[in-house]
Structures are given as structure tokens and as C-alpha cells.
Length: 339
Ligand code: WQD
Image (tube, rainbow, N blue to C red; front, side, top):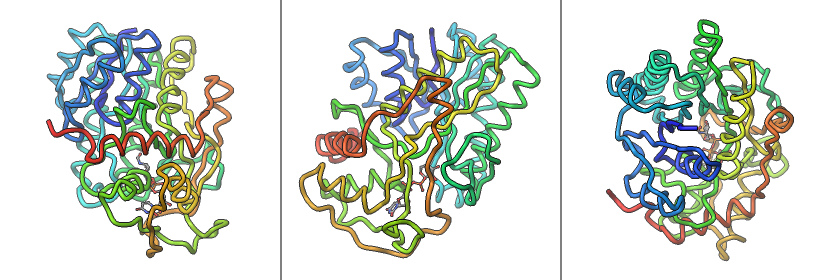
């Protein structure tokens, strides 16, 4: 199928674009490059072995987005474009609501006008809020504790309401747990701008010498070693989940489907630091610091619905996640070259 990948130059978007092409799809990237670099495109093309069509468009801008779908002959959309930093969303809530809700509304409007009926959406386990039991199941209630999380809860509702109005829509809401890792080539990977919010890129930047130590936010959680536990999954497994969801949407008569994409196996912060030390061959320095406000002790998936309905299962281990992250970071100590 000819597929529009919004945010396709980003971390998960780029890995998914590659797997869509490998699966035989004609994947087209649209990205405003506000949080990604143009230098990822030639690397993707080298890995894909063919040119990749790219449109530099802000999908919150309706005329430009409509024009893209009017001319594009797309059969589906995979929607990654969005702001995703929890802390930043607290400081800039209006920008998060405008950007994240705006791009979804703009894409859905253009899809309606141009008869594109299939969309895979990048949701997040953050929609389970702060009191959910583990393992998390798709039928749990949703809530949030920060504007970023609320944009994901609200976008899911927008998709559900759009599908009530137009039952011919086929929507996959994919709730990511904690994506980490990089393509095995080491030529594409996660390249957050500024100080990373997330654990894995921060560990990687310490390991490569860009930062001096990892601060472990709290070791007094009710977990086996006292540090927070999360369900880390390899970005390549995550990308494969999108390919599987897209295939399922082509055959289902359900208008909106929700799937957790996680391994179902929690890993603690301390265990991740130790695993990364094994992968990079030297001890990653760390220090225990106070808890980060808003953090929960544990988050991990019940992935059984994706396994039974999509035939999808995360295969890669934490050691592989660390080894692939290290290959990317050590080959690209400063991330992608500036544009
Ligand atoms: C993981 C663990 C921290 C950094 C967030 C968003 C979620 C998704 C993934 C977008 C926690 C600990 C972290 C550090 C640490 N983002 N930590 N020192 O908070 O589970 O999820 O990112 O979709 O929506 O909520 O991920 O990587 O920030 O933290 O000790 O320097 O690592 O306390 O236990 P999180 P994270």
C-alpha cells in the first residue's frame, strides 16, 4: 500500500518507515523537521536501498495537509507526528494541545475529504495514568497526570468519535510502553534534542562520555531493587507491530482497535544501567537522586491481545536493546549531523 508516515523522520517513525518498505509498502515521509534532522533521510535510503519520498510539511496546517492527501493517492496513514516530552508539556501545555490535537484533527479531516480510511496511531502507555495495576490491559480506564498524557487520551477519544461518525474508518491505537534500541546497522537511532528526558538515551550519552553520570531517580520504590520498573521494548519490535497492525486493519470489520505494544517483562533502572555497562564494556557511572515528580513505581504491559490478534510478540532482549543502542551511540556520539 502507499502509506503516509507522519513524523517519519523521527526515532520510531524512521525505523517503522524502513520496515514498511521492507514489507513491500510504498512509505512516504511527511515531517516538519522541528524535532528531527534531514540527515536521517539519506541514511534511511541507504538502508532501504531506494529513494524515499519526503514532504516537509507541518501536519497541523490544514491546507498543506489536505493538499498532500489530495495529490498523494495514499491508502493509509501511520501517525507519529507529535510532541512527546512530559516535562516540556507541563511548561508549554498550549503548544502540546495545539500541535498534537491539531495534527490529528488536520489529518482526519484530510483523510475524510480524500477517502483515506485507515490510520495507525502512536499512542502510549501513559494513558493508563498513575494508579493502574500491572500488567496493564487495554480495557483499563484512561487518564493522565500531565498535558502530554492528556493529548494522548484526547487523541484516542477523537479517533473513537470519528469512527462512530464514519464506521468505515479503520483505526489502530498502539499503546507503546518504553521504546528503546536502534537499527542493528548503528546508522539510525534515537537522537533527542537537548538533555534527554528518557533513561536509555541518557545512559547512552553517559556511556559515550557526553555526560558524566546517570541520576537514578529514586531507589525507595516498592520494587525488588527499589528503582522504577518499566517495560522496555526494542524499536525494531515496535516497528514490526505497526506493520502487523496495518495488515490487520485491512481484514478487520472493527472500526477502532487498541493494542499494547510491550514485552510484558519489567526491567528496573538499576538493571538497565547494569545491562548497558555489559553492552558498552565499562561501568556506567550513576548516582541515586530523589524521585522525579510524577513517576510511578511500575509500568508493564499485558501484551496478550496483540499476540493473539496481530500475531505480534516483542522478540529482542534487554541485552540486545543495549547492544544496538550502544552501536548507534558509539558510531554517532553527537547523534545525527546538523542539517
Ligand atoms: C524510565 C525510568 C525513571 C531518566 C516516559 C513517558 C512515556 C513515554 C516514555 C513518550 C523511570 C527512570 C529516567 C533518568 C532515571 N514517552 N529515570 N533517570 O517516564 O517511563 O515514560 O517516556 O511516549 O509517555 O511518560 O520513561 O525513560 O523517562 O523513565 O532514573 O535520567 O527511568 O524514574 O523509572 P517513562 P523514562
